Each structure stands twice: as C-alpha cells, then as structure tokens.
Length: 123
Image 1 (cartoon, one colour):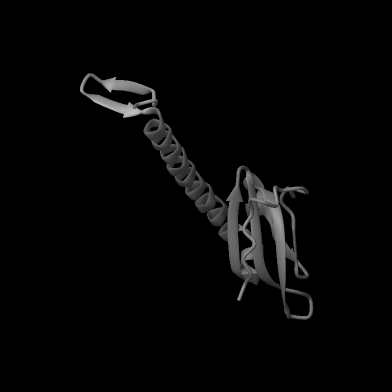
Image 2 (tube, helix red, strand yellow):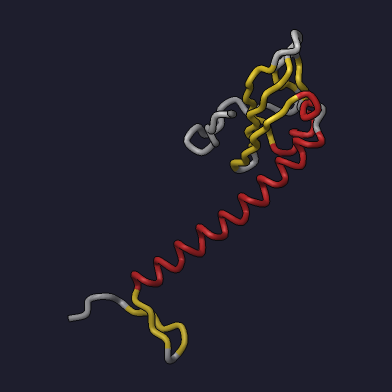
C-alpha cells in the first residue's frame, strides 16, 4: 500500500514527497550555513579593522542577519581586562572603539534576537 505522493524530476527518477522535502530542507540549511559563514567572515574582518581590536583580545564575533555580536576582553582605564559584549550593525563594526572597557561607536543594535546570538564564555 503506497500513500506517498511522488514527483517526477526526470523520466526515470521518482522521489517520494517525504524525500523531496528532506532534500529541500537539507539544501536550505546548507545554503544558510554558507551565507552565515560569509557574514561571520565579514564581521570578523571589520572587527579587525576597528580601533577596539587593538586594545581588546579574545574576541568572538558572530553574525546574525545584519547584526554582528562582539564579545571581547577589553582593557579598561585601570589596565584591567573587562569582558564586554556589543551588538552592532554589520556595516559599522569597523568604527567600534574601546572606551574604558566598553564597546562604543558604530551603530548599536538595541534588541538583537537573543535566541540566535552566540553565548559562549571567554576562557
């Protein structure tokens, strides 16, 4: 007994609807992963161009859409590293500065999607 609908891609190849849906989902996830990797690389490059990158270390840069989330250990006015996190528009990350242990400059994003940004702890 066969209840699955089938689609014909080529005359000799037939795929069940379930298999087709799995292939579409897998392709979508792969494409999203590749796009996110390119965006992460762009955020990372912009971060390295910022003046904050010179006085901050151990940065974790994660992209979500057009938002770059930066978590870094930055020197404050006493010369002690503070662990800070900032969310900035991706096209403004290169303008981020370290102001006494706080990430400022750039265009901040006040309400990023908390379910999507990386929450790893810096060791």
